[in-house]
Amino acid sequence: MRRILTIVLGVVVLGAGFFIAKTLASSEQKIRPTPKKTAPTVFTEIVQNGDIPVTVIESGNLVAKNRINLYAEVQGVMEPTSKEFKPGVVYRKGEVMVSIRDNDFYAQLQAQKSTFQNLITSILPDLRMDFPDIYQKWDIYIREFDMNKPVAELPKPGSDKEKFFLTGKNIYTTYYSTKNLEIVLEKYQMKAPYSGILTDAVVTPGSLVRPGQKLGEFIDPTVYELEVSLSKSEVSFVSVGKKVIVRDKETTDKIWNGYIIRINGKIDLGTQTVKVYIEISGEGLYEGLYLEALINGHIEHNAYEINRSLLVDETNVYVVEDNSLQLVSVEPVVYNEKTVIVKGLENGKEIVSRPVAGAYTGMTVNIFEE
Image (cartoon, rainbow, N blue to C red; front, side, top):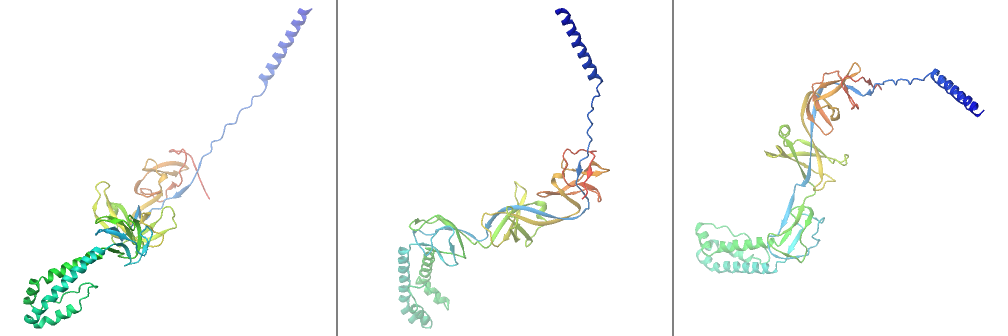
């Protein structure tokens, strides 16, 4: 009985399996639809060659046109003045910036003046006797002699005889020795040669200053120079007096007008460039500021300007012909920061104006229409 039941159950299972297999085989299989290939859309523009002015863009750091490194010419202890000798302090023209103690030297000068005064006084009797016609002018000179004022210029001799007499009495030697000491005394006080600002200070009041020691730096903050380097071909298109636009690359809203004041006559051996100097002035300028100069150069005739990213292998660009991409050879003539001026494109050609991902020759494209 159990054996018969097993056989019957096996037959049922086989039949069910056969039925299921037949059903699956006869069922209709679904076919995946083939995706349609879509051509990418490209942006284009029509080539129209023309005259393109070339703008040379070069960068450099500002340097004050009037700039002085302050050095001591005498020795002594630095004394305080009406203003602190520190960076950022503004001085007007003629204002004392550095004062060095001059007591000893001043006494030496006064002693020399006294010697000179006594020497002239000693020759007055001889002048009265031998040169009565010139005695009066020397008498007036010695009466107006003031120890607290600079020594006045000597009366001019009226004859060779008078000049030889004065020379023999050491009048000229003593006079120029005294004037030399007066010149040295002036060096104990350093005055501003023009209105400006102190940008560096090395010493402070109370310091011992020695001859040749650097004291600081002083500039005129109203006029600056920008030094840029131009290639040999670019230099031929610039001249002294040419106007230049200068801008701050980080903040494009800051623009200054300048002009070329000097062109170096020597080519740098390493870079094969020539130094050109541009003078600019205005608000917002500081020494050391990094700026760009935009110099109008020559004009490229029958040329076209495109984005540098459109160049393929540096000498080709894509154009659209019959809704497919084709490579056309061009001649790059001037490279700018973001663009390049090329020649060789025919007028009316439809050039790709934005890079196309995965572009290749013969690629089918659609042209974007606004």
